[in-house]
Length: 117
Image (tube, rainbow, N blue to C red; front, side, top):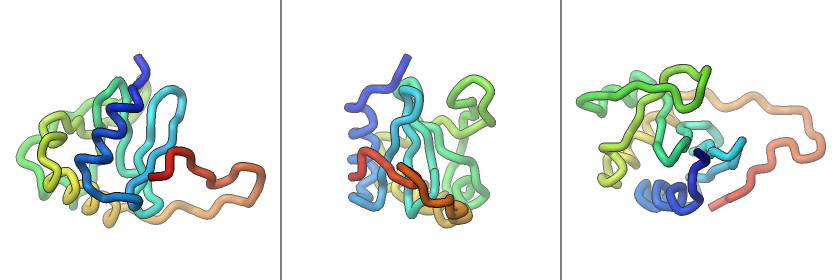
């Protein structure tokens, strides 16, 4: 089941990060970007955050699951969605712990993201 645009909009609104948080549709699902880093995926209308030590320090419990078949384990963050402050802190901590993406060779569409917020 592909994720709904309404759910992605809800996640972005709850995070309260404005234009700093963007998303890109990929194969019917979405990748969320903060500070040019992929911090989470929205798959099957569920939020999956990349695991980092900095993010783990902010959470009591984590439910791990792959966001899509064959993926690494991510944190499924259903419980955090209704707590905007906690979600915002988690996404910021995750982005800060991740390296910047490597620059891709410029070409048609390289680096272009849709759904810029």
